[in-house]
Length: 362
Image 1 (cartoon, rainbow, N blue to C red):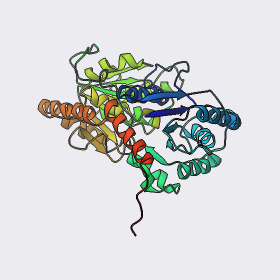
Image 2 (cartoon, rainbow, N blue to C red):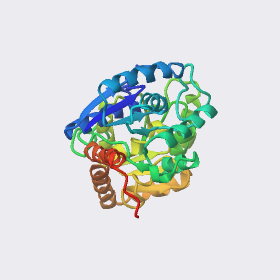
Image 3 (cartoon, rainbow, N blue to C red):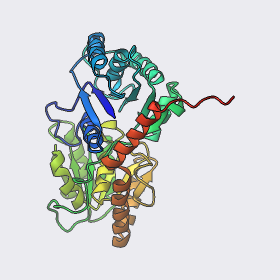
């Protein structure tokens, strides 16, 4: 099969290796997975803004008219606009993946649309595409609210590099204390504060925070909270960490605490599970498809420190339970989130849109 992947970004910006990595890099991982299954892949990635969509669409139309792919897969909403326009007169099906939707989903493009205009365009793109893939059931529900038929949406989760995020491998140095790990986005104060309050009710454990707090003056309030709670000596803040440094850190942790609803951080609990680390997450920060409550970790309805502390204590109190959850977590990631499996599920979407329509019964 000849497949054209279209994306307006490939995650090559400064700091792209900081963890978690830019979701745009998943496009290249998907390309490698599809190529590994014997398909011919072309990745089109000019760096454009919304005002250049027309010119970009014309370039794509010229390319595809000379060398038409069997299917086009657009990633991110601006690429969807260009791909649909470029394929309009060529009878080539377009599959769309948004990766993030609507207000607050990411930085606005220079010369781009307002949030309201973007939402309208996303709805039009989804209805015009031959098929849409969603990362999670929550995203599928959000697409339905935009008026995109559920029948045209297939859930295909992002993949995980199971060669990197796996239980065997080096461990980051640690002491004898049980270790809680948290990855916090810049500007997040509520998540680390809730984790600190939970830590105060988990005697003897330590909390390692990746990403924040850093040099922001507001961080002083978090350090003050740690001192007030009497856990200052059990808090370690690492600032930014590269993707290569994360698997050893994840393996060194007993539990990952995930309180971050940002789409950019959605794969953090899955990658921790791949390393054999159980996860405790709030329900709106992790997909129930990934973190299986009572099997690979726990989902809690809110970042309530009391609930968090109870779940953490339950896991740390039973080494056998902790190990069992870790084994189940790694198994879940290998079976559901490997790029080989994600590639197969993506190909199934392509094959469905290329299949001839069934003849109506006479």
